[in-house]
Amino acid sequence: MRNTTKITAAVLAAGALTLGLTACGSDKGSAGDKDGPLVVAATPTPQGAILDYVKKNLAKKAGLDLEVKEFTDYVTPNTAVQQGEVFANYFQHKPYLDDFNKKNKTDIVPVPGATVHLEPLGVYSKKIKKLDELKKGATVAVPNDTTNEARALKLLADNGVLKLKAGVGFTATPKDVVSNPLNLKFKELEAAQLPRSIDDVDAAVINGNYALEADLSPAKDAIVAEKAKGNPYGNFLAVKKGDENDPRVKKLAKLLTSPEVKKFIDEKYDGSIVAAF
Image (cartoon, rainbow, N blue to C red; front, side):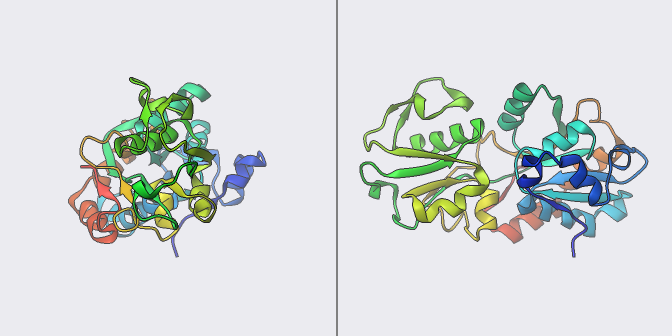
């Protein structure tokens, strides 16, 4: 059994983040203790699995005491780092972190040299096998957080389904669609809910980690998926500003970008998750 603690989005919604972490045997003091274990928040797939591999196979030899706490949403891992409930997290890409820091007045930063992997965003459907089979008025589900929604719309635009306003960048919303020949309707959902929406929509644009949790392979099941080359959405290790040089963080950053981890990612995920180093 993994040495992890799952904390659901419902905990956050109930306003009980601190209580939930304390009840699981970790408190602010232990997580922030630089002489104690390095406590890292992560979403389960693939980040939790990658960290679990490091913990079981590489950490002891490197002199790193690693503790992993799993979260199932994209908010609490950052909140926990900011509040000192955990020391670091591994679940997000730079556009998402930039948007989160701006909206929440937090100061979380990437650890230099610790970008680990890319989770290709893909389009999935039980009703069509190619994008050109989408009918007029079809409904497409997309993530409702700012950066991943823009990412989903860009994927559709890159594949000729629609056109976006020039220069809209990482903050595109359906309002920035300037050409929509099929008059597609967009259903905006929390990213974690997207796999469950497939039966109710014509297509869904799903983040790689949530696709894998739903037994969907970006490499095999996606109608179209993002390309890895030049992609700005690599996932990295992150900490509160000022903690980048913590010796434990540096050790973990080195382990996460080691040849052993690259081999683990390549063999376990077979192209569904791509090493970014």
